[in-house]
View 1 (cartoon, rainbow, N blue to C red):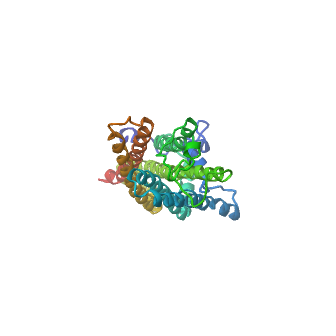
View 2: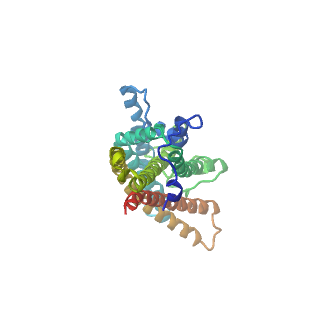
View 3: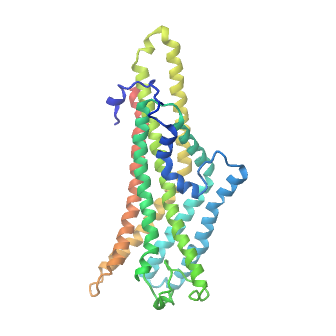
Amino acid sequence: MTDVHITLTCDQEDVANGPEQNPEEDRDWALGLNRVSLDLMGIWPHRDDTPRLASLRTLRVPMMIGNLIFATILPQTYALSLVYKDLPLALDNVATNIASVMATMKLILFWQNRHDLYALLKEAMDDWLVDKSTWERSVMKKQARRARIFTISGYACLLGCVANYTLLPYFGLTPRILNNITDPGMYDGRFFPMQVAFPFDSTKSPVFEVIYFFAMMGVFYDGVAFTVPDNLFGALVFHCSAQFEMLGVKMQQLLNGPLGFDINKQSLFETRLKQVVDTHIRLISFIQKVERSFNGIILSQIIGLSATGCCYGFQILDILDKEEESIPLIRFCICAGAAFTLMLQMLIYCLASEVFLEHVSFPCYTMC
């Protein structure tokens, strides 16, 4: 289950915040990868913020939501009304449109729960700043290392998403199906990264450049909405797993140690028992906030990823079914990569949840 055979031999009271440890550096190492993206969304806690500045920071997410709605969802929906009779074009549209809708929903839920997320982040940061033994520090760093892998994989997905729509057009390639219905400027190389349409001529300058800029911002916000909540979820889950692992070992040492049998040390036993109970109550509150903040986000992601995965799966089968034509390798790789990324995201959620369940159950097993 956990490294009990190692942790039981460690002295929990050996506080070692000496020269070899720097709590602030540990905190920055554990949560620093999340800080850039969360600061971008105005969620990262700044201790020197004024209420007015903090309110202005939180407006960044509504601006992202507005860009997604007016620059990606509505133009794609209008394009869908033009190509719905052509199944491959319709599915090409729906795959990216559902992703944009799901990204918007995640951002809305993320913004609604910003106060709980803010409190969770502050609590996690404070846990890194308290005095810790060498063993406690090693446990927290072990779980933080897993959270960093989780975060790096999320940033890799974000980079791949943005590169897919920004770099390929420079080489004359596109991740979608070009057509003369929604892409009247396709022969002049003036087409958008997603299948969008407008009730006016969007191929002329500077209209084309302005729309293209906001469309690319929408692609970036899509990637941010997919990765940032997931990265934060992973960081909080693994942090809480470390706290429960330490709590379980402390409970086992307390129950199996000599304090409970020495009447002269009964008051010390009661003091430490109270500390364990207070820590357990705090962690339960932490879990409830995580559950309250991410239930809707995970539900919308499951529904959206399922629908998007079906669209990409159909496109892959449609590409492979063209026996008389050469297989468009680039588009096949893009669809297969997108489907693989979607499955990987759900696998990461399941993995993080399993690790969390294992460590949450550990204190119960120690009492048996």
